Length: 333
Ligand SMILES: Nc1nc2c(c(=O)[nH]1)N[C@H]1C(S)=C(S)[C@@H](COP(=O)(O)O)O[C@H]1N2
Ligand SMILES: [Mo]
Image 1 (cartoon, rainbow, N blue to C red):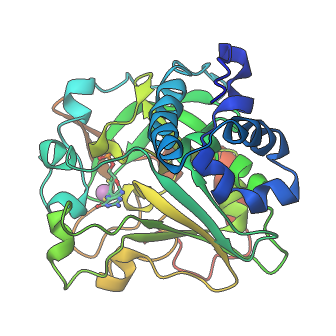
Image 2 (spheres, rainbow, N blue to C red):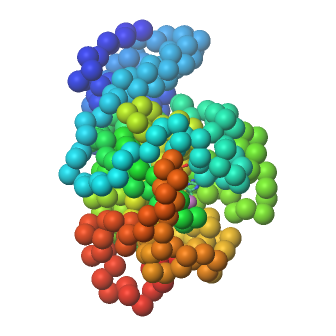
């Protein structure tokens, strides 16, 4: 079959496998990825036997992943101020919350069992045209950049890390939600044989999170595909996770497989488990304690120091406007 070797700057039009052709008929129809689908059709036309097609498909996926890795490092967006040193990778990559792999922080080894590529993403619900596509095909079409963000866990520890990724607003535009879409609901994979935490049936798996459409379109809402200038390790939520730095860390859902646009407010994983402790909004506020502990200060990972927690985790300027008129609601839990 015909193999076209793209140059690096041509990637976004060529991150393609024959399999994507089948999965992206609908994308092809709606025109947004017409050039991609068109290129792949040419490639498939050269393949005769079924066996050959299978071989091409396997090779194609590996190729897609390799090309996505070549996009690193993403250009830095320095327009969002940060006043803290970046947390050592050694520290942040060995202290993680990922309940699918255990309810403690040392899950990084166990999480390596997750096969995070190839990885299918479904965009569904109240959208013009639902679509399933490979994560690397999505990434290739997004405006990639690196941003340094604070991350504040509801358990009162924090870190500061450079995420690579793209604005969630770009994914929303790509999805073309209908006016009936009021919320974006996101879900993590469900693979109990790999993620032993999911065998614990008292948890409401799969992990679910949600944002309002206004939050999803806010400039700070970010889809991370990498960290420290490299593709995400599994412990960080490979291949794609949310980063909403003005909210407690549990909102930043990892290893997403489904983006569903909906008219109905989603119930998140932790809200389902303990609604008095964890709500839908979960905006960081040092003055509103968790029912069992204070949120006034946080331990900065790797420094042995506690510092005061900031309103909206220091991002008040960018996000306070989202909550005008909602003051009656419990915005900080
Ligand atoms: N699927 C999934 N996403 C998740 C979690 C989880 O257990 N499962 N934990 C959340 C919590 S509580 C935090 S603080 C962050 C931790 O992200 P980090 O390990 O990259 O620091 O991920 C969030 N996303
Ligand atoms: Mo957290």
